[in-house]
Amino acid sequence: MDQEYSADQAKDRVLEAALAHVPFDGWSEATLAAAITDSDVAPALARALYPRGGIDLAVAYHRRGDARMAEALADLPSLRYRDRVALAVMLRLEAAERELVRRGSALFALPQHAAEGAGLIWGTADAIWNALGDTSRDVNWYSKRATLSAVYGATVLYWLGDTSEGNADTRAFLDRRIETVMQIEKVKAGFRANPLGKALLNGPLAFLDRLQAPQGTGDLPGQTPR
Image (cartoon, rainbow, N blue to C red; front, side):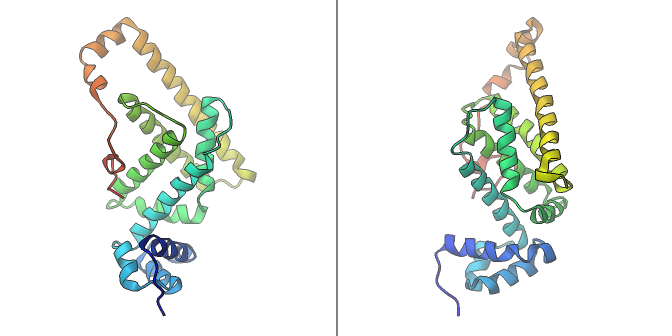
């Protein structure tokens, strides 16, 4: 017999029930149907919460991982900046199950879902920077998230095939990517200090200084309101 749950409780119950089915059926309609049965949530409510079926389940799972990562970063230790970024990425990976992420990667690789998948990665980068206390609101807001999105996406793909103990190889891969980013940041700083760079930023590239960060999560690139 269906129990009465709040919308948040029902959404969590359906998602949790779905996780056992994803390795076999992927993020699919079959998984949603099985999760509804297992969760004892009224079918009408469950389908209202996940109207697109498996894709909405996958999105909810990804965003839950972002939230858990942010919680884990609440008591961030005193580390070098690059080490804090690396820790945040590794905590995000630890908040996920490899096979579920593999299934999600296959889903978001499909042309009709690729833009949404890219938006979720951008959302993860945004969650990491926010958890690390980033206060930029200008063009740096975009460049930081774009760079970290690329680093995170590459690291996830490496992690999916990592069989090393404690994901040591993934951490080494991530450190190399971050080192590359740090070199890029040095080049950017040098460009801004260079007379030619200053002239370009005050002339043809002046529009960059007028860019402002979005006002809400629904304004993130590739994102829809939650």
